[in-house]
Image (cartoon, rainbow, N blue to C red; front, side, top):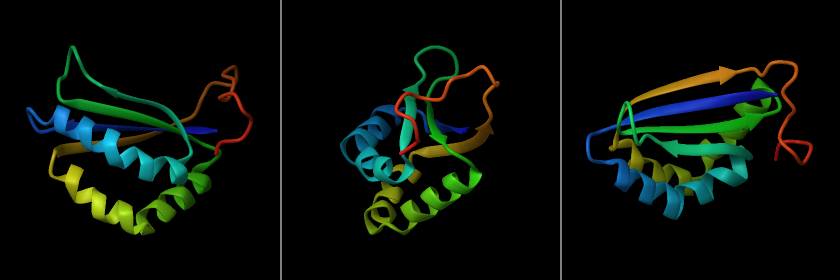
Length: 110
């Protein structure tokens, strides 16, 4: 099991617009492809205008095939410019859990 932590720094004042776009349209396109969403957050205190979302995958190969399929979806291709113009920087990290961490309930990642 691996976890992908994606952190976006948004342009000042664009957090509400980003949240609205992802909530109303983006997540409905992403989730069937990417599978198990652990969390989707925005900063309230500290570094502002920051979005963090975390996805769980069986492996790097699983992540790669899921993200490739999403990238081919015409709805996702059409949606991307709606949020890309709001993002200043992006950071992506792949994390492996300690052996004592139990995978999310429900068995496989789907």
